Amino acid sequence: MFSFERGTFLGEVWIARFSLMNAMATTVELSFYIIVSGTLLGALLGVVLVYAAWPFRLLVRVYVDVMRGIPVLVLIFFWFFGLAFFKIHVSAFWSGVMAIGAFCAAHMAETVRGAIQSIPQGQTEAAKAIGMTFVPRLWYVILPQAARRVVPPWVNTAVEMVKATTLLSIIGVVELLLATQQAVARNYMIIEFYLAAAFCFFVINFTLSQIGAYLERRFAYMRY
Amino acid sequence: MPAPLLRAIDIHKSYDQTEVLKGIDLEVYQGQVVALIGSSGSGKTTFLRCVNLLEEYQQGEIDLDGQPIGYRMANGRRQRLSERAVSAQRARIGFVFQSFNLFPHMTAEQNVMLGLTKVRGMASGEARERARSWLDRVGLSQRRDHYPYQLSGGQQQRVAIARAVAMEPRLVLFDEVTSALDPELVAEVLGVMQDLAKSGMTMIVVSHEMLFVRDVADRVVFMDGGRIVQEGPPAQVFKNPESERLRAFLGRFHGLFGA
Ligand SMILES: Nc1ncnc2c1ncn2[C@@H]1O[C@H](COP(=O)(O)OP(=O)(O)OP(=O)(O)O)[C@@H](O)[C@H]1O
Ligand SMILES: [Mg+2]
Image 1 (cartoon, rainbow over the protein chains, first blue to last red):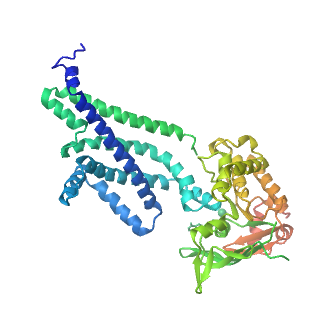
Image 2: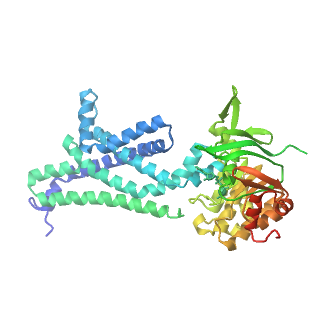
Image 3: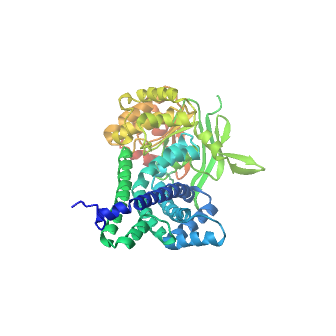
C-alpha cells in the first residue's frame, strides 16, 4: 500500500520532494508578502478614501477602480514586461509580488473604506467631544472598530490572493503549480499530483480562515 | 456680576438654505444649570453642537471664559481655527449624547480613561485612579470592567457622564440624555446629573423631563424656530409663559404646571 518505489505516487513525490517543498515555500512567501503589503497599503488607501481632501480621494479612487477592473494576469504581464522594457531589473518573484500586491491593496482599500464608513458617526463625535485630534481618534477609536468589520472580507481577499499566486507560473516563478506541472511532465501522474497541489492550497487557505476565525473571536467583545 | 463662563452672541446656523439658528444669545455663569426646552426641531441640539464645535456656524461668536472659541478674525475675515486648536477647546467642554456613544471596544474604565491619557497626557495609573473615582461617583464601581454591551442603557449613560466630567471640563452639555432610556432607568441618570449640579458643575441641559428642569435648573430657556423666545427662572417661565407657543408646549406636560 505505502510503497515508495519509483512509479508509485509516494515514490514520485519523494523524488520531487525538494522541488515541491521549495515551491510550497515560494507560494507561502509570495502570499505572505502580497497579503502583508496589500493590507498595509490598502489600509492607508482606505483611510485616504474616507478622510483625505478630494484630489487625493479622486486619485486613490481611480487607482482602486482601475486595479479592480483589470484581470490580474494583465497586471502581472504589465509589471513583468513593463519593468523589463524600462530596463529595471526585478526578478519574476518580486514583480509578481508587486503586481498582485497592488491588486490586493485596491481590494483592501475598498474593504477598509466600507468598514470605516459603517462605524456610527457618534463614535467620531464622542472622541471629538473629549478633545481628541484626528490621528488619535483614528488610532484608538475608529480603526480598532473597523478592524473587526474588516476581518471576514479580509480573509476572502487573502484567499483570493493565494490562489492568484498560481498565475505567476506563467512568468516562470516556480511556485506550487509550476513545480507540480514540472513533476507531472516527468511522471505523468496528472490526477494524483494536481490533487496533491490542490490539497496544499487548501491547507494554506484553511490556515488563513482559521486566523480569521481566531481574530473574530478576539474581537467578539466589540458588540453593539 | 462676574463675567459669564459661556457667552453666545447672535449665533446663526444654516444647513444648506434653511436657517436653523436665527440669532441665539445666551449667557451661562459659573455653577449655573441652564435648561434648554422647546419642541422638536427648534434647534436645541444644533445649538449645543455649535457650542461644542461639532458643527460650524455662519455667523456669531461663542466665548468661553471670555475667549472666543472655534473661529478667529484674520484680516477682517472669520476663520475656523485649526483642528488642534478646536480639539483643545472641545476638551474644556463636555458633551453627553442622547445615544451614549460609548466606545464599544473598551471597558467602562477604559472609556473614561481614554481622554485622560490621550488628551490630558496623564499617566495611566493616575488616569485609572481618576476614572475609578468617577465611576464610583456615578454608582458603577462594580461595573468598571464591563463592556458597553454588558451594561443597561442607564449604566451606559452614567459611564458617558463619567467620561465627560472626568476631563474636568468648564462646562458640560447634556442633549436629551434620558430620551433613549426605558422609563425605569431615567431616574438613576437624572440623579447623577442632580448630584453634579449640586457640586457646582456648570451645565446646559436639553431635556423634556420637566420635573427635573423645575427642580434643578437655575434658568430655563425656551427655544422655538431657532430663536430664544423666553428665559428666566423655572418658576417664572412655567407660571407666566409669555407666548402662545410656550403655553402650547407646556400644555403637553399635562397639568404639571397648574391649569
Ligand atoms: N445635519 C442636518 N442637515 C440638515 N438639517 C438638519 C441637520 N440637523 C438638523 N437639521 C434641522 O435643523 C433643525 C433643528 O434641529 P435640532 O436637531 O437642532 O432640533 P432639536 O430642537 O434638537 O429637536 P429634537 O427635540 O427633536 O431633538 C431641524 O429642522 C432639523 O431638521
Ligand atoms: Mg435634539
